[in-house]
Length: 110
Image 1 (cartoon, rainbow, N blue to C red):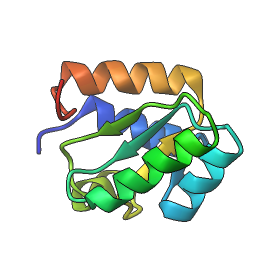
Image 2: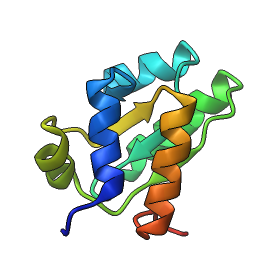
Image 3: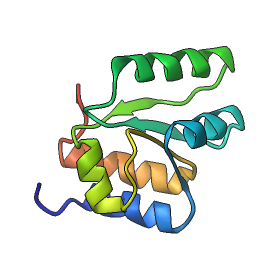
Image 4: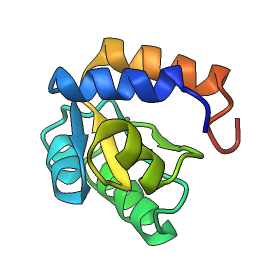
């Protein structure tokens, strides 16, 4: 995969402490209402996406779930942490990451 500004921005968010990576950290972020969006990799299971959809509805939270084209391995290579799900916990990072993901056509269904 060529150099991606979206993945670089995710790395910046991680270094700033505004990215919750992995299942347990993402659940905690959603429940505590810190999550601005949930990002799920291409090779993560549909069950995982369904679980977070139910969790978001259960807590009456308006948080978008974004399924991206990069895989867990690509996330691991770019961010240094292997995870199939993560949350962005800052509004400014979310806005920029979402814009870059759309520009680079990395979102399924966009």
